[in-house]
Image (tube, rainbow, N blue to C red; front, side):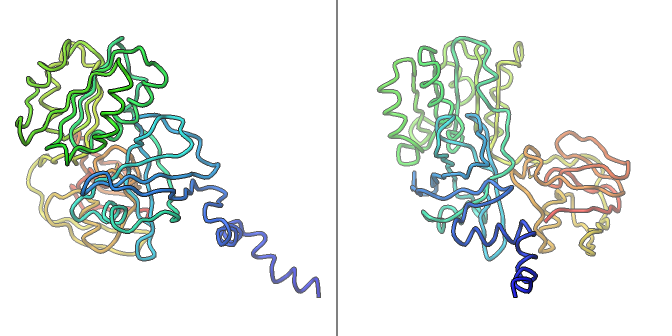
Length: 353
Ligand code: FES
């Protein structure tokens, strides 16, 4: 009898995934290999932006201020994720990610409308170079627009804790106070931390600031370590101020790049998704990620702007072009990022779902 029972349960006992699923019935964050986290709190910051506070399991080994993680949620039985930046002090036991709802964005909409305390999310793809490790001067400057505040908020809290004597100047652009994410937190931080100079710029009343306006508000702009997080057009305006010392400028953008057409107009080409036994013909020069999604297929992805590498897949054969760098890949069996690559010829891919 014991032998029969063991025979019946042995496939469960010796299959880690099944054991994990069984454990998750009692402890939803139990896992042998995934950073699963309990949603401890959900807070509306402003009308279209929500912060989620998470308690990760013991597989989480930390992340730096300014870094991002992919937050995966389950929508209609399917796991989907997007990358979001940490918005609390580095080293905090509870993590906080702040998510602006993007029109048509499945994950940001789900987090803003459906996610609740007690739910479980999965974190992966932790990384990013937008960190305080890039500091090179004794005074530090920050510029953020809208939801670009998220990684900066984490860095400000970390500086307050680890280097409170460091002079820090922060130029923050939002439409008005009602649209200013963390307005109260920033006021409280500036009130208790004398080294912080907070400059709130409301574009409704003061206009969208040019790079010259920002430079005029920040003494020494262009000669001090500066972190800028905002739309690409703002970053591009600021870059010339750092032409003599580009190493002082650290940037991150939350808007996908506008991909230039990088060559002659292409006719339609065929895309074979070898491992899925599917194929289709491209239309236009859209990145492969969008072309594949238009077929109702959802490849793994995160930032959708060529940074996080989540969408990396194997190009088995054919020619592709990186839309950010213009680089062409002709050789077989090369890795490409679907979100920032277009097909130049008939191609065959193996993609991760
Ligand atoms: S989704 Fe992040 S690099 Fe493609």
